[in-house]
Every structure is written in C-alpha cells, then in structure tokens.
Length: 509
Image (tube, rainbow, N blue to C red):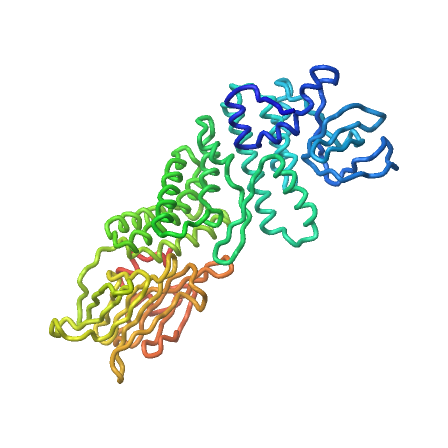
C-alpha cells in the first residue's frame, strides 16, 4: 500500500527527490490509521544499532539492528517498549520507546519537524535521520508552503545532507566505522538518495546525483544563497561525467557557465560571490582551451577574457582557507590558458615563429630568421598535439634563443625554449613540475642582459596544494641557478622582468 501525496506538485517533488519508495515506507500505515490504529503510527529510529527484540524485554533476543533514519510502523505499546513492524525487512518486534520518534505527518506538526530538521541537518553522521525528517516535513507542510520558502529550506536540507553523506563515503571506506557508513548509505538509498561514483585523474569520488539541487534552482522561493550553493554543487568537475568527445565537453562546460551566471545574484554575500567567480574562472578556462583546440580564436579569446575577469573579481580577503585553495587552483588553470586572450603580434628581433598543421593533426612550430629567404629551411621545428600559443613568443635581444608557451593538455602549460649552441639550433621543454601533466604552468618572465639566463615562473598542483616558484634559469642547461617562493626575493625579477609578463601574469597575484 503506497502513500499518495496531497497535491500534484507534492507528488512530483517526492517522485524526484525522496522517492515514492520512502513515502511508502513512512506512510504504509496511513490506511490502517484511518480505521483502527492510533493517529500516530510511524516511528523514526533516532539512534544507531537499535535492537529489534523478539519480546518487550531487554533480555529478549535481538532479531536485527536498526539504524537512525529508518521508519517503522507502530502497532502497539507494552510497558517501555513499542510493538513495531519493519516493512523493509518484513518482520515485527519490539523497540524501546525512547529510541523512536513518533511522526503524525499533519500540519500542526510541521513547525516542530522543521525545527528538528534544521538542527539535525547540521549534525555530521545524522544524515539518514535528517532525510527521514525531511520526508515527514514534506508530508506535513501545506501545498502552498511547499512551494514557498519552507519548501526550499527542506529541499536545501535534503541536498546538503546527501552531499555530506557522499563526502563521508569518499573518505570513509576501510575505516573502523565502515559498517556504520554502509548502514547509513543503505538507509539513504531507501530514502531515494542516489549516489554515483566518478573517476577523475585516477581518483575515485562518491557524489550525490544532485536531484534536489536541480529542483531547488527551479524554485522561485529559494534564496540567493541556496541557489548559489546548488550551482556550486552541480558544477564540481570531480562529480561530472566527462564526455569522450571534446565538442561534448565544451557543450557541457557552456551549460555550466550559464548555470553559474544565473546563480550570481547581486544580493549574495561577498564570500558567496567569490566562490561563484572562482568556479566561473575554472569553467571558462576549460571552454577557452576547447575553443582554441578547434581553431576558433575569436571565441577562445572571449572565453579566456571571461576567465580572467572572473579571477579579477575575487577579493582574497573574503575567502576562508578551503576557498583560498580553490581560488589558487582556479588561478593556475586561468594562467595556463591566458594567452588565448592575447592577439598574435609580430615578434621583434632576429627570430620569429610560424606554425603549420601536420598531416597527422599535430601543430608544428617552425623557428625562422626573418632576414632569411622565404624558402629557407626553418632553424628548428617541433610538433605538439596540444595548443601552441604563438602570441607568447619572446626572443632574446641577441637572437640566440626564444621562449614559447605550449599547452599540451587542458590546464598544463609548458615552456619551450629554442636556443642556439655550437651544434646548431635545438629546442628543450621546461614543464611546470616533475609530475604527470595535471594542473600547472611554466612561463617566461624575462631575459637577463646577455641572453644567457631567463626568468621563469612555475606553479603546479601537488597533493591538493599549489607550489609556486620563481627561478633564474641557465639557458645552456635549463637548470635553475637560483630559486625563491617570492619574486621579490630574487633581484633579477625586480630589475629585468618582462613588462607584459608583469602586467598580465597571474603568477604575481
């Protein structure tokens, strides 16, 4: 026997969020209550490892263990015990009355349920009980309230608890409380909460499927903060199923950018606007790289400018520690793609670069002497499957070297250095760090007089942290002669920085 929600709107809400299965579990006793049973016939288990006993005695055999958030039908009372029926396990028994919370599900109970939901939803580890209280609150609230601020509050509580449970599942496998986590996940699943597992860069993450967040965004009564929280949850890259095709990934990111823009309300508190801007910078940087890869320079330039503008709107003073880490990660991504926003201009000096598309699809960079004949062979050539940022070409005054930014994959920009030695011209690659390509950049910051040393800024993500270094690199070997974590600690960065680098780079943020 299933419970029928009071309105068409409520039926839709339940079907998509807490699921009809939860309503059936909580309110199977509705028909029975209308005939012979007391009005209050549902009990929510409020603790973990509650024994369902065969008789109303503490010494009676335990038939199974119950977990907080489970719903039982109450069929009677004997002393300090309640006689219950567990519809999920299809068995009856007795539970101490102090371990159950009776739920009537009527309008008079709604304020109490909302108050309890507000308290329980903030308690880590109590997510299954909070989800059950949310279900009861939806049943108790009038239809008009469900469409208003109270309904939005319930939706927000459901989504936040589901997300927190997913975070517990991500970090909790194999710990001593693994059995407790498994039980809570099972109860949440019966409540209609769907969790999915995603893999990104070799790391597995358990994520909430976001149904309640999506419905919250569609509610006009939801507050600006609730919508911002929902938008941030739905745009987490580690919880998105990444399409195989680059074009599909670009379309996905464009949808995320639109979602974030709609959630960015002027009434938001500064720290929420900063969080949205951080995520916008991350998303637009991915869009810029994707557009550049399909040779759409104008749209790539617009996307890169959107990313740079988003980073520029962030006040670091408004960020807490976790937000600051995300800001730095986003800034690294944006700086890696910032050359997409720059127009290609002719380089001055004795060296220039030109690109051509190889038969296999790679982009090949040819180093040329502008004074040589048009049909003269290139001084040096190297090809890449990634994105060559020709606008970044920076030759030294002596005409013996040139630095060029090349981005082999999204979020990872290397520095190619063409140089002349006794054996002729060659090219070496300076990566952001001695890591597998992930998130980072190595960028030219200036030439020392004489052209034998160049200034390099390098930053990369490692173990969840950004490591930024400023280096004076010997051209002959591309090895750092001096390194500092602050550019001002190195004299050459004060005396000979490239003006464009100092003006445009995010390495000095």
